[in-house]
Image 1 (tube, one colour):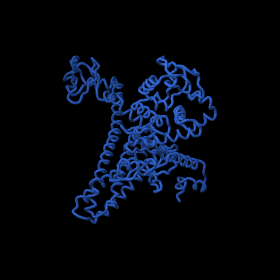
Image 2: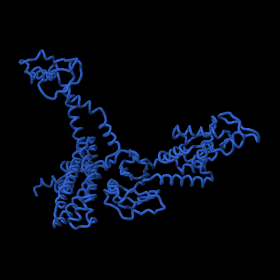
Image 3: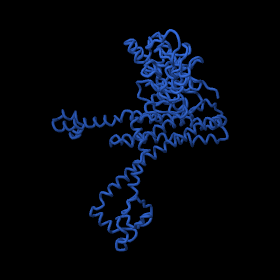
Image 4: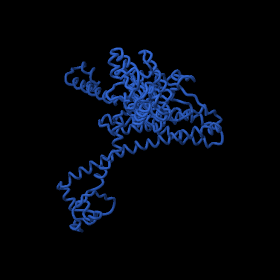
Length: 558
């Protein structure tokens, strides 16, 4: 299917916002790009569902840059510096590399102290060595004599033959990006090797490597730009400062946080996400499981898990020590008089005396910690799985179901967009809901936790109703033999559920981004009211006090 790319912003980022949670924006936010201009768009109609998801929720606060866009911006900066400072493009490139591609920084430093900048960067105005007017020159690397026209020098004047220049440049290019800051082969000479020298002496293969390093430096040295972290993707993201929403989406369909480059996780902050990811990959949960579900062999100290059977335990070879699971004493001292195979009187009596309190407390704490972590992790992972399934269902609906439904219900596909919108809402809400479980795991405050769980529960209930409607009830109309009078009712119901679910998640996102501040406000208000009430009871007299305190009024018996 043919499609047109939409332009989401210009290089200066002076475009409006279209927040998924703020109720949408105007059509003016999207400008069709000309054929002569680079395509900065990241929303394409009917191209990729993940891009539609991102456009559905994201603010227009970033620009996706393809390789040709990056190259054009890079050359524009070089040309601007070259024109303003009246220097060659090779020298402008050296300056920009030195000042991390900051045009304003180059201008400020140059006009403040041109001579100092030239010396620091290696752009020399006059040679540091003077060559003889006639005769041969000796190459500074191979020390062979050459005619004057056979040697090449930088602005410093140090002579080197073409063969040595080729070898020197090739070696540094193959050593990595350090070739971008290459200096004269003469030791201690500050003269910088410009792009013109690489053009002249590098092989075709080496030139490709050099220009790749040169291009990548424009992104990697720029604080406003980052590469898309998706494997094999060569697009970059230019981000506009002054916004708290760091979620961006690349043309390759990868959605990620521009700040920490992890997957998109709004409304949860980057610190919480980093903690959660470390916890999921750390060995601490393995140790908690071992502590909660095993005991060390009294002899060899290896951890042993008891998953069923009696209390008689035998350690694995070569230890083979036999002991009681409860009291950890040798099994030879056990029998019918100590409780048999499924109990231990010695353990119970010792427990009553407090001999096992500390060990039991540690084991119980580890078990509770593990159960709590498992609770949140399972729901986090479950919503991720549900989101992936929803993406697949949306793709299937767009490729197969909508066309079939259009034929059965005699309705144009353009009037069935409410189904795609419902799936997009589900996909976005599953992402938000997934990360709320990571947020909840690290939420310590009891009052805030209750409010958080209420908002999360309301949002989740709304999402489940929407998911059930679009997943189950739609099948009735897909399997119908002809148009159904109930289809318009289904349309109204699904559209309403989509809107309600969006509202639930809008409230949830706003609350989390505000740090559940409503709980603090309500708490302060409650304390203030309580304080006023107590003062009224203690000092108020007659009818004057009854106007201020509700409790005083009721006690009058009016």
